[in-house]
Amino acid sequence: MNSPRLTDTHQPFPVPLRGGAVATSDPAWDDFCVAVAEELDAYFDGLKDTVRCSPGFPVLRSRIREQVTGGKLLRPRLTRLAWRAFGGRAEPVMDGATRNAPDPDCVRLAASFELLHAALLVHDDVVDRDPVRRGRPTVGELYRRDAHSAGAPSDEAQHLGEAVAIIGGDLLLAGALQLATTCTTDPVRLQAVSAVVFDAVTASAAGELDDVLLSMHRYGQQHPAVQDILNMERLKTATYSFEAPLRAGALLAGANQEDAARLAQAGSRIGVAYQVVDDVLGTFGDPRLTGKSTEADLREGKATVLTAHGMQDARARKALAGFAAGNVTVAQVKAALAQAGAETSAVKLAAELVADAQDALERLPLPEAERAELSAICHYVLHRRK
Image 1: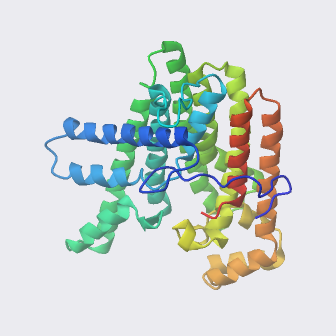
Image 2: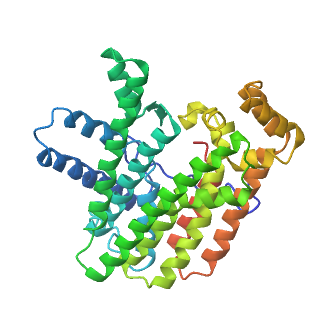
């Protein structure tokens, strides 16, 4: 995927110190990743003391803990970036061996976004009926297998898996809100940050609802327009993944509401571009890299920018209708969408969104280091393969 605005001179998005990954070239970021992991460990360890008499709870606690491993820590990165950009700079390298510890308030807020992300993924897997996430079974799928092994009928095993996944997602959501509402002792900043996180949860719920309802186009309703899909993707994912971490991080550092909002608006465009690329990967990506099926979106009747574009092409429109009727294969639909230029159109749209975001960022008073980091994230969004 190439963008007319970005070149390959940027460094790829660094992989944090999680699950045995190698260190990056930024020691302070590595330290921050370790601190976030320790914050998450402390939260899950605390659950042991909260619930002691439930025989099933330890297994659930362990399985939802796994949902917070293996990610890129994008949301913590954005939280820390915004926090540093607006005055939170307590992390300079002191010498070759000694560094200041990451700011605990910023770490706690960053960890809350990781828990929020995990919670919404667990719930989303139930909504989408996905058995795989990041190349491994979802929480619901693990419990479905347990029930199946115990002799439960298929429908009952499926129901048990979905029920426990909802419970696990709720537990992760509670943890996210707990960390977000205790991330600082400054009452003014805490109120501002907490409001951002609560609004992000509400927006995501609205977006998830819209995503489900937009899929009703399979049953004779008009296919949603591209803008309707972009609005849904902003609410469902871009708000909590990009807007909220940037806005909350800036407010935690003491930024005024106007500057924090302007940064969040740029983040919104980057986040929507991320989801547009996700649509492309969800249909044309390599499942060995993405860790998820490239047929699920089509089988679930998801309204994406790809299908919206396809509906403007007679051959692709016919293929989509035939697939809904069971007369066309997934491979044939993909071929029709590709021939209609759906992938090219989506990538162009993502590049335009990122270009708009970069224009907005140019008008913000950001330090050069943070501006460069945002530019690297923009590059990653457009060129990622998973």
